[in-house]
Length: 391
Image 1 (tube, helix red, strand yellow):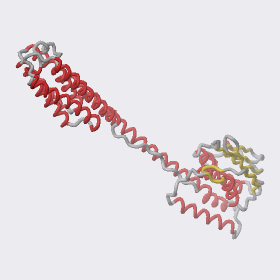
Image 2 (cartoon, helix red, strand yellow):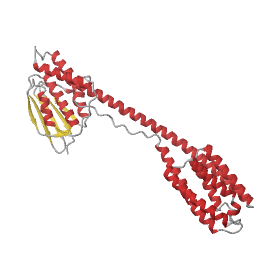
Image 3 (tube, helix red, strand yellow):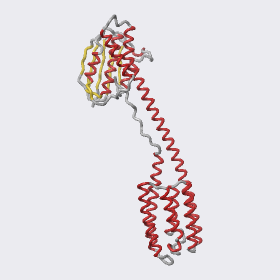
Image 4 (cartoon, one colour):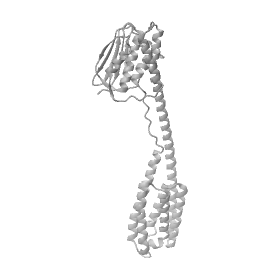
């Protein structure tokens, strides 16, 4: 009896969009800090007009350049932590306070000095990498220290101008980061909900498939035997009938357990069909079976469908001559059950009848195959089971 395979449930991803945003908000700040540190250091060393003091400038530039390299390395390898942001803001604030001895007065106006670029980079990075409750105070701190340093350097216009720029950068970047995080969070929640619904759908489908499989097995065994008894096909004591009841009992026991899923290893389908015919000794069938190996699950489905078709002959066309054929070609395999019984009109079979609908059509559909039933009153019945899986 084939077992129903468990559904393949997709792995749970809690925040794919948030993870992507985090990667972006880690890589870009790291590159900004690295570029600013290296280029800003080179610019600082190229302009050392008084009152710039080389004794202060050189250690500060060396420290900030080394820090920029370390910041980029830590951010890319381990992410940006609050401690990393706090250290970055602290170093920038100290550099801003030292503007009088780090920046020449003639390059300070115009918000284009290397310290101005350093302050802007720090403010933008802080808003992008830290929560608002930390990033906004950090932006205000850098703004205040820059205004203080520029004022001390004798450039109040620059102090006011770039302080205003830093405030705008703080506000705009903070709002942009907040909107993006909110939208990304909403997208992640929708994605998680979609995953949950997908898992529930797969599990529900698996449960329905398992129920249909059990119904097929019950129809083909226990219910078929009871139908034979009800039709009077069993007279008196019968060894064959006892054997059939024993097989039905084994089926019921198997249905109560969760058995292993049918493997993909090839098994001889012709031997399976020969065994199926042997399960119905009261029906002497002519066998024309071409040797053929298929996956175990396919062999289970085809052989059980053939058994259902042969059982129908026993119940509805006793005494009919039956042929069970198996053939294969480059496209797939086909098993056929043909009898010369009274036949029937397939269109008149009630929808609630389970035999053809599930035991044959449904079972073949579950493996990607198909069943074709041809019959007419007085013309016998031919059931063809096809599986297009042999290349």
